[in-house]
Length: 628
Image (cartoon, rainbow, N blue to C red; front, side, top):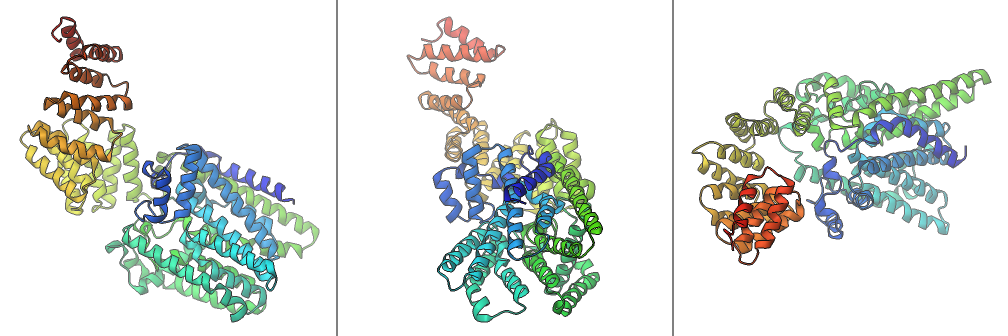
């Protein structure tokens, strides 16, 4: 089959699988990956590389790719989905090329299965997991370049091939650190080809790779603990428990590859401390499998090589290192995107090799079966990808298979609240709290919902206080507790204290600065309020609400000339804000010689909102010459 024919076939299969997800929006942490406004400039691109706080994870190649994609199509999510799809197809084509280079039978079947296998859906349909699809392209391209170097040793092109391979390996690690397993995988491939490894020929040339791999892996583990919060009681396991967990995880992933049923965005989180004693069998089975395949290596080294590749590629996700997603589950389909290649290739090679030795009738029937398998996997992936069409579908599907998933309940509640479905949102927040009573975010979200409902301020206060008892350094809870207290008579001083504590915890918190300013105005401390509005505006210069609040405070302090620019700035951001036109008119009337402008803004306010009585009365007064 010609390359472009194969590419068209794989692209067609991928479109069949992922068509339902192509118009899907942002889910879970996509908002933290798609380039934020403060990183969309050239300066922001630099921060992606040198500022560890700039992005959710320090994967600068990935976030540079997102930065570039945003320059091309902005926030249109279809573009990100299409790029993920194209990268997935490219990885499948590189896999076919690599297997052919290694003379492994069934290369096209392996590529086709990889394209349509349901365990890949999470990596391809979820925008954040472009880290998987992009890193695998670099990973496989690096492996191909290294094999060329190995084939051409002693010739001038070999040096260039080695440099290209090493450069691609660095790009892979800087896209996702799981690619640090590549040098070990290359040694497995070389051993499989030759039956033994030579220190000088095989190992020495990969020593720089291992140095980079270890450095990249340790750096990522440190970032997960230091910046992503992968520390605390939820992550505390003994070494023995981690070994037992690794056996459980290994067989879980193999099982999902062989029988991809009941795939879930977030799987149930195992209680390792109580369940791990019964997991000895998993670990023993993994050790026994390794020993059995080692014993049979003289007959065929392929199965052992595939097993070592699978287990080795999974090693970073087997529980020996803490990663933040372990807070929700120890397993996720996207963790085995790279590792699945080994098992899929082994199955395809075994099937193709077995069929090649059969008579034509059996061979034809066998390939028809393989085609049917690809078709079934395509249908399963299509159904799975439909879950990614929007947040409600994703979290509803997750809860259906994992009813105790507090994260899905909590996030579904957020989506319901965002779309005005308050009663459903409250039910989901309470379900999240029931599944995890110490979930500070669940109590906070329930409080936030109650705060927006009439007569529920007292309920909101109770939930915010519960959230703070669980997580005292929670500035959002402090800020919203201040909002709730400010709604009740006689609680103004308590509200101010909460805003001030929120700002102590996070000085660069624009909402708390603005809210504190608003309450200080009500308390008659307008001059103090102005400094807080100005601080909020420095953090959010394009926030119309803050511009208006500062303008009002300045007008109240009889500083109309200073207030006018802020009202004008708010109207540049919100030209259809009728009330702001009226307030700007009021400020203009306080400055001699601006009556005509004031009248124009009052007329515009009434055009936008004919029932705006303050503007109508003010316009009548102006026309009666109450103003000069």
